[in-house]
Image (tube, rainbow, N blue to C red; front, side, top):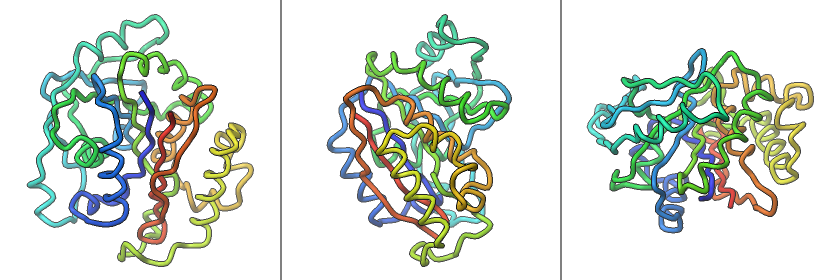
Length: 254
């Protein structure tokens, strides 16, 4: 299976018809049908690593201050308890735990809504352990490459640049120069397969302080970059910055 990183941005993308949502719909037609989908979402932060294992995971509306119509959107895929159990029991991993109650958050369902709108493919999420640093996450992610050969689609959902304190109300607001600079910096690092820049961006890019004030939305991108194998290419199927300070850069590796 290929692997995907998707910049999910504002919850308003759930009901928007823009170039970003159009790019997801176009990608949907080209994607193979996986046995299951594993999402690493910026919206599930924990101490330690967890995978959810509910047979029918609840849809989590983890946003506020949005039009009521967003709460009427339904996306209820089946869960993947057997796959969650196999990950926890795999000897390649230590201390991954199962969460039987956790549902599917916006970071997952808001993008799957466009990629697999029928909601008929089993979905599970893996949390982000916030006690680990960027290098730890990158090395940890590499261990999951075997899932690709089991026809499991791995998706990282976050944003390479996200500074909500600086964000503008209008989706098409002029991007801040530091947002453009850091987005381009990471684009080039991905194309050059420059792991040093991806992991140690704070020591290299002057724009990092504003572009990545916290790394929760950046880390899902590292999970996908870590899964690139020899001979595989990266393709950016969407580029752009919303609200002045949120990079919607999204890519596929295959």
